[in-house]
Image 1 (cartoon, helix red, strand yellow):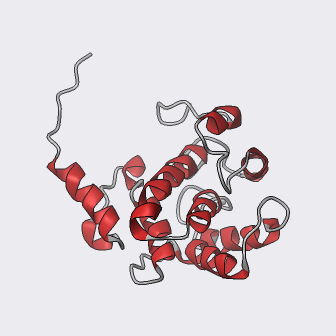
Image 2 (cartoon, helix red, strand yellow):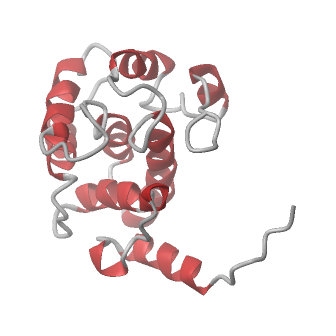
Length: 178
């Protein structure tokens, strides 16, 4: 259990349609087995899955390259060495994606360039870039709630992500009942 939520197994993830398209069970197993921080924590497995879900929701609305967005979701934090300040983790994730290309996934040179940039730059707070990079970054930023930070509209890149946050802000808070 991480932060009160059960971490889905790879088999569960495949049932949840994660195996569709680019993200395969073998790729996920490979990434999971080498991840230094394990399943627990703010940047682990469950975060990757939420970024994947966010990205799949955003990509059709933004016109982003879905393959790049999906790959970003599982590589961007895959090389973290700690849960705190880790300034090189995005670059390491980008480098690792280059190493895994051809072994666990296929991507064109243009897709790899986008994936590399998305991973390497994702923690820099940028908002101006190619729409695929913007979609990757927004998919990650939409999951900031996991660390108690509400995503700021002015730090999101795409109109689609901004609309999601605006909608969520308008929703009334409901009283939780046991």
